[in-house]
Length: 141
Image (cartoon, rainbow, N blue to C red; front, side):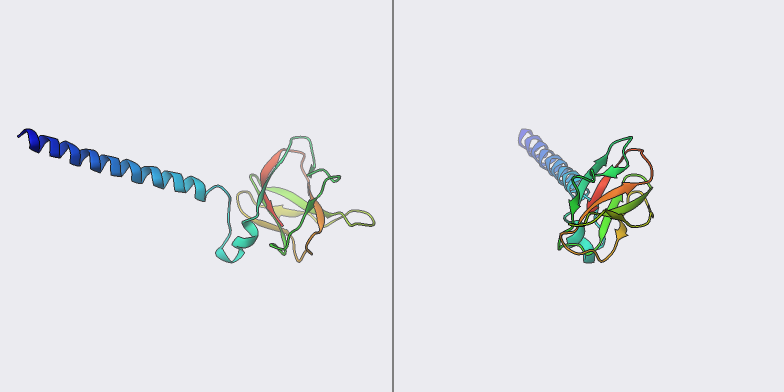
């Protein structure tokens, strides 16, 4: 009887440990999978280089126009994934001449939004927000 009880406790321990391990792995991989928002598989290479941003309350630009962002060869468009809906424009900083901004684009919270299309690699730019409310999320270009 003593041996039977020990075997049952071992089995119970193994089953419980396996269940905890499976739950831990599922929870851990869900966090990693949700670390950055991604679009469909076809655009994954662009969104895979997504960078977080945080525009403080009281400002209209991200980043400062004096420290612009730069497009890469991974994306042909400039994309933004804001935590709140907003109106956003992209302002281009040419190597010579004055800054030019495209029109306002209504962007939807918690999804990728294209705010400029067919942009050349290594183009300098920054985001202009119609509101001075804080904004955070991701961008990819």
